[in-house]
Length: 421
Image (cartoon, rainbow, N blue to C red):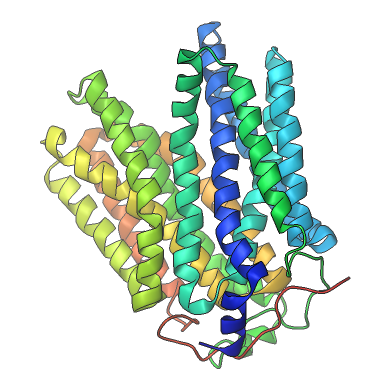
């Protein structure tokens, strides 16, 4: 452990970031999905086409992508704390506006704003946490953050159904969760590292194997781009399982109850496996953890190919592993960026990562559905195996240069992303 890492771990402000940011983000995501699920259900009940309902959901992801393009400039201007709290405040206003409107156009505009604010919270929160975490425990805390995302996604629709059953105003519940999120985020406003700062001359973490890169222009991009391709494939596998497999199961003999249970199992894997895989990266090193992750995915998809004739048995295992371990690919990529970069370069690289991941999650379900329509379950299984082979190769190339971690603590102390412009 370096001196800087020790100081980071022990500082009250850093501890506040490491524990509060995941908690705030859980409330944030739960609120988002209460509102988004209610809008989707209401529009469907009004008889709108699936295309128009999907267009509102797409507005959310468009907002996230737009936010990722400007996140660096916002953080440079307002700092981590100002950006994070400001995005939470904007999200609260967006959720309140969704409750006050009852029109398709009003909801679409509100969802676009909610997506933009959510994208800023996402990029800022991940970057801030990765910056604050000590190298030897970064995996655990990044995994905790990703777990909070999964739990929020699972909790949101459940809370929406509970609110309907209790005859509570659903948008009121969403606004209440977002208000709690905003209040909790205010505890971070005076946290060290939250002020805007002037980028240091070198935001690439100093390591003997990486110092030659730090002298090149756009060194952060050279490091982040290979990892971004890994994130695309991870997002494709994770979203392909969660959004596609429950529907596919209905076409291969599952009843509605079993298909819903399969969707819940996939969601549980996505929510619960992130922290364990982050902890694994802390214990055995990032590259070994990445190899283990893709090894599991390869074994699972190979089993899917061999067992495609018996979907009633094989889809349960395939869904859980692709949802959970596929999601862990993204978790490990975030950890790797935290090991390699710091300061403004970390924010820019994280924005690129979010863009890549959301791209993968966008194309995964439609691509998988087209493959199933053309080639059936066996063809889908073969395609997933091919994507895992490609992902294993990309993951090996992206992590082959040593990075700071439990088994590589050669990094020199770096100044945190603090100061005044």
